[in-house]
Amino acid sequence: MAVTITLSVGLNGANRPADVMAIQKALNDIQPSAGGANPKLVPDGLSGPKTRAAILHFQQVHLGLTQDSKVDPGGSTLREMNAILDPSIMAADPKALALTDMVVSNLWARFALTAVNGLLVGNTAAGLETHFHLSRAKLPQSVYLQIIKQNYTRVINVFGRAAQVFRSRTDAQAASDRGVDDDGVPFPAYTFFQQSVNFTTSFKPFDGTSGFGPMCRAAMVLHEPIHFVDQLANNANDFYEHGSQYPNISPEQAVHNPSSYVCFAEQIVFGTDVRFGAGKPEI
Image (cartoon, rainbow, N blue to C red; front, side):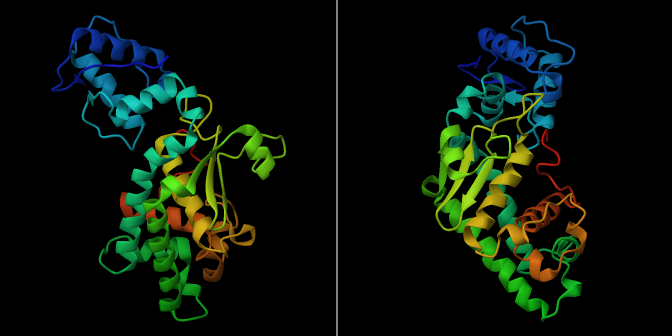
């Protein structure tokens, strides 16, 4: 069941006893694998070190959250807690969850574009080689870099009008769209080129057994718009970042592979090749 608070709870919060108790109970109700309190908190309404540590632990597990040991009314930490406690909140409108995750996806895309434009150093050359394999290029590297810049720029523009481009799809709609697997389970997200980016009831927060963590969802929200903006980002050029083919695809394939864009952006932001996505659903 979703929880509401009137004032902030945790470090430097107002810590109204009823609000503190609500957060303590919420953290106790969330599975430890999804960032819940372990050991359980005593719901005494007092914001002590254990309660603040439990809040911080939840924020650390859900990497997209600000790690400030505080829960604010209407803030991202409380939204993530409620999405786990009551998945129907976001399952009823997966587009709303995607729009929330897009804040992180947009940041990643902007950092990646800045790097490709030569305004960031560090991991840029390594990231380009790992995910776009430019040393194997048949044409001048500038040709491939221009495609990469163009796709990131177009995706950022899509994010600017995501309220119109993103859609929630029911299970019946996903089946009608053929956005389901062989068992009839909706894909978390799927895209129609220059038409729509679609999110289904499978696109939901990780609850300890199913769903996806915030970094995984942010990766999906960056992945799908590449399909939207690039007509060649089709099944022939869609290679899973943890698959055996990924290290060996050509630059001509990589510049149209959505996973290459996601993984390069993540490497720029995190400084290492993290590869958040479906292979790490809980993160």
